[in-house]
Length: 466
Image 1 (cartoon, helix red, strand yellow):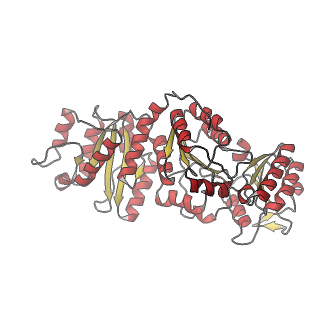
Image 2 (image 1 turned 90 degrees about the vertical axis):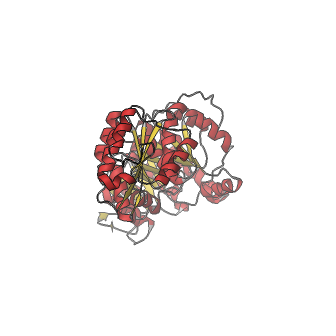
């Protein structure tokens, strides 16, 4: 698998210089950050985007580690045969028009698989969007280059998706709006050869990945998947598509996937340690939380620091619904908190700082309350509410994270306010390893998932078929 992720040279079969074409996007994306040799292949050009272009894979002068194919499906078998003659043993087929379109496409896909096996070629895809490695700025995909227009946020979570979710819109939303950093994103498509098990095993050994999120419509090797997850030391979050009758029909036409008994599968996977997600954004935010807040105790005792009494009350309700506890502060912490509140207001959890804003100012009130609570041995996690754009600059995220780590506390943030300031807050939180959320309920879900993770890793599962 390493040659897919870290090739020294890449051939683009179907490269193009025509603006807006998939071959042009793919070439432009490789030129953006890939440091190895790039060989465009197209008999209609002698040069593409400043690079010499070759009429076929066999005419490339140097060795090639990886070929990416983006040509009409009927021509792919010939291109694969040429890769075999050139000794290119790793191929990503991004072209569509295979088993997802019916019997004729299935026959074509089987022919490609047979050619690849006879030539010892591993196929990634077809009908996929390839691989993105954001820390290395490697975009082995035809998605629109505007995805990195607003900047990239490298992260410690990686994704495996049986879909074209690697579209510019999805990654742009994660990075520019939600400010969630991503390491590697892998679109595996029809899985004619390389499947979720192959990629998952690679990412579990990847030192740059701390947690993995998957969107799957089917399992290629269900029992093997369970075995991999059971021995995983990294959190795995799964979103399943095609669980309903209508969804299963849609999955069949999307990636030619046949889903099994979804409820049974999820029970088996939860027993193996998988966290189950219900929508795309939850999958991402759960994966990030499990990477950022490891070691959270079961039913963790949570302190809430808020600017709003109502938000504090709602947080209590949601935390207890999830089986978490509201921390009971020590006498020392209670005495410290009294120092920032008016005499008429007793200190309690949730800590509603609004009355303290008038006497101490918002930033000092936050700092004082956090410093008192983070040292309390009766607190396992701090759920910080913050509003930006009204009280000057936000609090020092780096200092707070360092203090929480030093005291062995989990830290999670709900941030709202003016749009630009809120985006800045989330960027700052992400940079310092603090999961920041736009909804109280989602923040609580993520904290609860982190508190349950170790319990699920008891591995009491008796593996059954998937």
